[in-house]
Amino acid sequence: MRMNTSTNSNLAGFFNPKNIAVIGASEKNQWFANLLENARKTGFEGKFFPVNPKAAAVCGIPAVPSIGELPGTVDFGVIMVNSRLVFSTLQELAARNIKNVLLISSGFSESAGEGERLQAEVREFCIGNGISLVGPNCLGFINVAGRASVFGGGSVQIDPVPGDIGLVSQSGASLEVIATKMFKKGLGISLMVSSGNEAVVSFEDCLEYLVDHGSTRVIAAFIEGFRNTPALRRIAMKAAAKRIPIVAVKVGGSAKGSAAAMSHTGALAGNDRVAGAFMRQYGIARAGSIEELVETVGIFSRCSVPKGRGLAVCTLSGGLAGMYADICSSLKINLPDFSPGTVAALKAALPEFANPANPLDLTGQGFYFGMENVMRIILDDPNIDVVATLSFPPEKEGDLYAMHNEYIIKSAASTEKPVIPLTFREMTDFARKYYRDRGLYFIEHPADGFRAIAHLLDYVKFLERVGR
Image 1 (cartoon, rainbow, N blue to C red):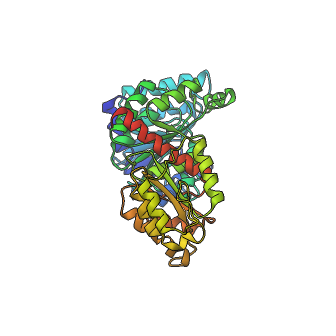
Image 2: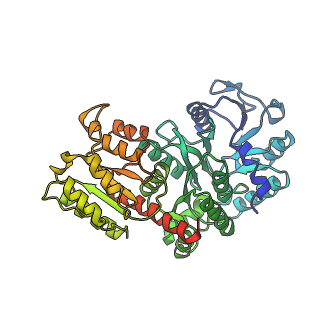
Image 3: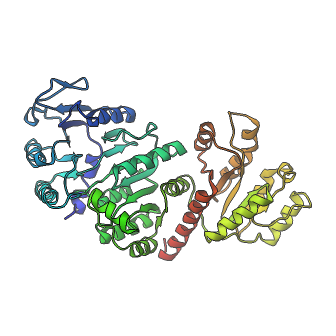
């Protein structure tokens, strides 16, 4: 049994706690220290109350000996005790009217037999007592946009950056890897959630909250197994109505992958071909890797959904133009011929030896003929809906490379069509920040970058099919 719609509305309070009790807080492991550090990085202004009868303080914070002695302002409980003690702990929290609970402890449905019985007991009690519980066997969440964090992981390498990407993962470690790559890419997250075994609050509940709560433009998901396909179908169509793309890595395509998912969170991976068909039917973009996932949510975060599916590619190398054409062909990306008017205008704007075809090789000399004019010509072409164009990642503010990129910035500001920098040199942290600060998605690695464009264009096709 999962949360119903009325209970799901309680997640707004769940993801915005004020005062947090941590039952089982100790300095003998890293969990409580991680909770504190992640909250500090997020800018959380609430309080933590470690509950430990054997310690006067934990990590410098005065400890409370029992749940019964917690102040009445506590509105959230974190449980990190042995699985056999979880049920009695839940009873004590319910007696104090603490109805939002994160269960970090493992030893439940990911383990057959006794673990499954314990999880069923937890689920029944929580549903009967109106408790919103995320877990067990999970890391928690960081509400980056809301500056609230109850997250036990310690492997996100960069401080959280607020943004409009929602992230939900059935795997806590995978969540940390994805979040780190997003932050390194210069992307921002609204809310990131590790759902774990989903005894009460499900992956689908978290997904629906992200669709509904208003701070999310695109959703990234890491799925080990579908648990409620009717709910997922309904939520996917609600997301489509709001034009909120969902991009997912779905594991379990191999026998060993399926077994790993089952032993990790108890998720049944199911038939991979059926899962793939389901995702295509309901507009969920399936990424083949975490890198592809990050690139794809990046393009949806930074680019508006185009009105059509025609891509133009602009570079200054015939060799690269050929390589990009091959990549696009393999991904079934449409590179339409330029209209006759565009061809004529490009012939007038470029050296006579330049071939005004798509992909467009400007040639080294052609680059200096006036890129802003070239971009205007291409963007005016009715066959073109998206442009990926040559860009030099700058090394510092105001350098020659930054000056070259002014044509991209001006072009992007003058059109509703996505304009995507196609980087010609190796990226640096400064360059990533440069593009991020200007709201530009950029292609650093063509294999993943053009896959992201393919997902963007496939989403256009999906919206056309469902009439959105």
